[in-house]
Length: 254
Ligand SMILES: [Fe+2]
Image (cartoon, rainbow, N blue to C red; front, side):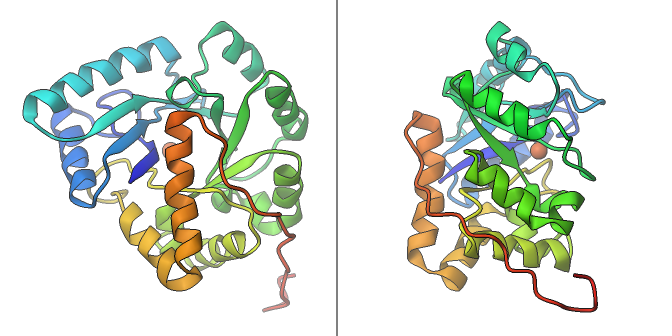
């Protein structure tokens, strides 16, 4: 099992503050059957800037530590870059880091909105030869209010990654419901932990995938498992025809 979104590297963002915290996260991941984690520190999110070179260096150091401790986990370099106007330039100059040097790139939206320039930028990223993966769109308030926006972004070539804890209801009912709707409507292609620690934001990827198996069936379960493997090897991911999310009237919200 491969996890394509984790803040496992020590001391560089809001993940663990020290190596022991990162080792604890590694052990937790291995215990649930994860063999490979793409480390994705925050970048350009107004609090943390982690450029590619620094992430690569920290990933190598942490991998040596895992090897020393005999923890059977491979950590690969990646990045969770907040959407920003110079993202294509960042990719070209090598400060924005695709996942494991493939052409897949994580793109994080602000939590309350989708910037007006997002559609153009996602298009420009694709023109530059990369495939944007919008991380945790189910946690974006504008997308929750207007699911057609997500449908349009996916139709225009973006992939999306659902956070395991959202699907399990750990961020509340609205996000849990929307996560299920995203899977039903073929609007998501990956499930990842987005783990930050072993307490409040721990790794529940295996539990979420088992939930997919029980709720949506074995085909979806294997699609999510295999799509994460595609990321690491740079192969094309499985995609089904996206559908608009049907908005049901309830409590007068829609
Ligand atoms: Fe994250």
